[in-house]
Image (spheres, rainbow over the protein chains, first blue to last red):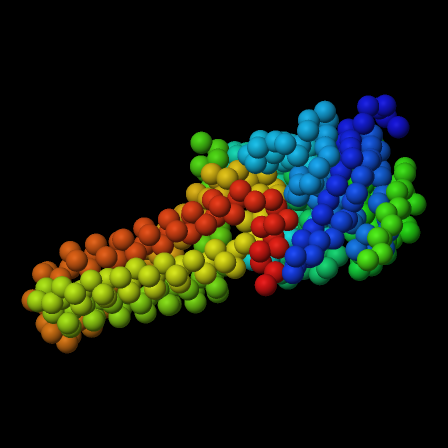
Length: 225
Length: 170
């Protein structure tokens, strides 16, 4: 472990979802978790156990009913919206389970999106995107629309977009699902590179290969109804 | 300044790239405007103001309701922009730019075609009398439609990313 201070601290988090018709589902009752700087944490468990919910809570995409989530000492679940957005873009790069790329934009524009949204100037933006596309072997794809890419290629674009603002923490939701061994190797190689740079990686996965690369694995259990 | 540029970048790109869906909306807005222009001209609006008023209300309502469809299909995108660090003002302004572009282009082209049809039916002499009224209502429709959309985006941006994204899952 590169540092003994946790970069992420989840304390006594309770999360309930409204499942409709007045019924609720309690995903977490009293969740506690610490992640350290430079660590690669894999979260495993059956479908529906709350892996994506946990990532959403850590990224500030969702709010817990009670408890606290600290990222680099900042309690993110009480930050106002715009401050949270600013903080999130500085700290987190997120690879979504369904990629959430904009199919009608080109590869270049999709990677450019987080930079543009955060007010990065045009010339700096162009240079950064070119660097990132180069690092992810995507240079020849720059002008292609995302809708014309394969599943694996889209995942690499999503990973490249997550790195656009050079975040300290990379959150990945099932990053290697449905991918061919070559693309999985490519993703693992780039994650290893990021670990060497001291980045923290948290990934939910069903993929044994990916969890074997992690420094630590936590297993979430599914609550029976 | 960077965030204003970000809004323009996003608004114009969305307008250009979601072209197929945008075309359908613009075609509807165009048809609404043509109908309003021709009907207002043919009913001799100045002699019977209640008809003009009814047509104007119909135009404003239909125009706003149609343009709001852009926001409805864009809910997951709003969530994504927020997830990627977009601020409330930036995203709202981006959608305002997109909606204003959609509204202006379809309304002005609808107005032009409507006036042409009207000129063929009743002659050019009636047009100068009716033009200020038509321009006012069409301009109001664009402003009200775009602002209604922007208010919706502003409200959406106050929710969590997961709440906004799940809005699109009908």
